[in-house]
Image 1: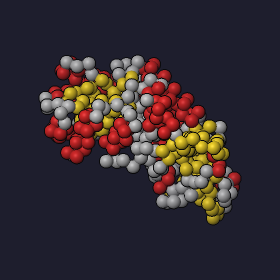
Image 2: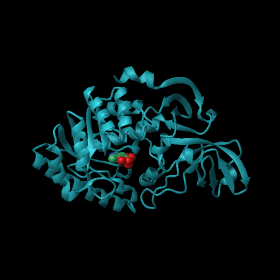
Image 3: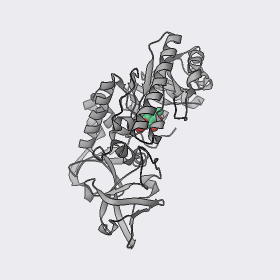
Image 4: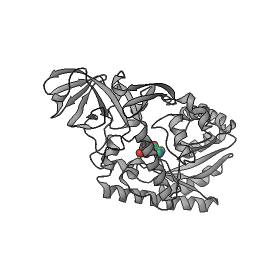
Amino acid sequence: MAEALEDKDLEPMEPLPVGELDTPAVVVDLDVVEKNLHLGADYAARAGAALRPHCKTHKSPYFARRQLTLGATGICVAKVGEAETFAGAGFMDIFIPNTIVGAGKARRLRALVERGVRLAVGVDHIEQARGLSAAMSEIEIMIEVDTGSHRGGVPVATAVGLAKEASAFPGLRVRGVYAYEGYQYSATDRDALAIRTWEGERALVEVGKAVGAALGIDPVISAGSTPALAAGVPCYPGVTELRPGTYIFFDAAQAHAAETLEHCAAHVLATVVSRPAPDRAILDSGSKTLTADVRGTGVCATEGHGLVCDLGGRPYPGLVVTHLSEEHGIVEGPTVDQLQVGQKVFVLPNHICPVVNLFDEVFCARNGQVERVLPVAARGRPQ
Ligand SMILES: Cc1ncc(COP(=O)(O)O)c(C=O)c1O
């Protein structure tokens, strides 16, 4: 499968210097991606856990295939529509670590199962289980547990009860438990990151074992987020599956956690379109390009709305996108006089995943030369 689909995914082109692309554009360095994919694979291997990368970051069958080639056992996506796109590209083992409600979506899940996709979805409320059971003849579910992120997830104390109740519905089979480790992003420093990650993962492992004992299954215990991987915080023993997503590209937040820019594989190429004042430059990239996402002040701290770099990814000291409107990025900082109208720069975004989702395609480059144009196949599929 891998070879057969590769050519279709990646449209070859005459090598083109990155600086000759029109802007705004997302440029991905394939050599850095490769290094990051190995980093993730090695992290999972050291943990003795299966790697199931979250493809919401790249949304591209090409990169997902590369992840499988390097040992991933399956993939994650966030939405039913994304699962349909990846299934259409030949991916047959998909976990949606998200809760899904509504008869229409359940019917679409059923269609995926009927075409042979090994599918699992998240459940953190009994009504989701009821809806899935009503629409499907069979599907695997993963119980989402809140281990500290306070997004979705059933409280630890009630997870076993939910697992038992859900497994009583016809057609539902509990595969295991999972947690979203968003708390990693707000850790104040690396020590806090390690402590919070281990506390959260230990709670998940304990609840996973309890669910396994209650249902008589060997449960999948699924965790994982990029900050810990970036900072080299090892995984808690007993986690059986890891779902990092951002690790493929990194971004300004992950670079802060890693304390290096060397893993930053994706930048937005932007043009300086004005220098209206000596202390200010304007880029053609605003919130519709960079998004307005900011991270915290701790281990994943970000500055403004992105770091301004040269086309080699080296930051101009202190130069930051300080304000955004929809189509304008306002750049300020001590080295702003190095920017001239017409010049192209790279911006390292704070959060790369929603940036990629804004583009139809990304330009894949090596050594400053664009080699391929890659469609962002699963972008814009929020349903
Ligand atoms: C449920 C779930 N799992 C895994 C991930 C991957 O996290 P990261 O991008 O930090 O690696 C995310 C990210 O949003 C997520 O929502």
